[in-house]
Length: 178
Image 1 (spheres, rainbow, N blue to C red):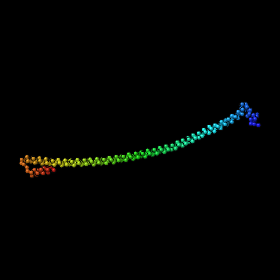
Image 2: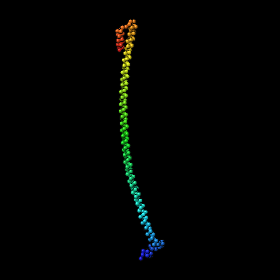
Image 3: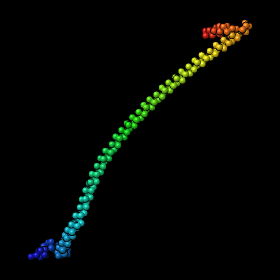
Image 4: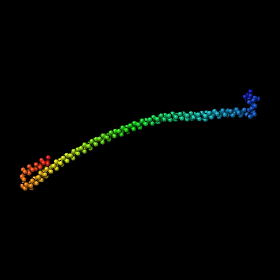
């Protein structure tokens, strides 16, 4: 007995298959054809597609890992940049403070030098004034002596000797000094 005769025998499955027009030879050839096509598709299409999908999954995982590493590196770089900026700010403030201190020292030094020069100028001016005063006083004494001698000679009407002129000159000088 063959499979087909068993299937062809009267049973409920066989009756239903005949009502729907199932031909067992065609059905079996369709199952064999489908199995061959399914095997070929599995071997040459489905497996390569699965391999490509697996490779893509690995690439995506690698990309995500790389992205995480890049985020960590970016965070580290940002932290380093922040630290460098803070350090640069501190250094800049130090340079500014040093420059201010240097400028103040230069200003103080130049101010002291200018004050010393001004004091020298004032001292020289004072010395010049004292000399000028002494010269004027000397000139005044001579002029007063000359006037006294001239006035005395005119009032007395006589010609004064050198000794008289000297005595009158000394008297006039002593009167002016007092």
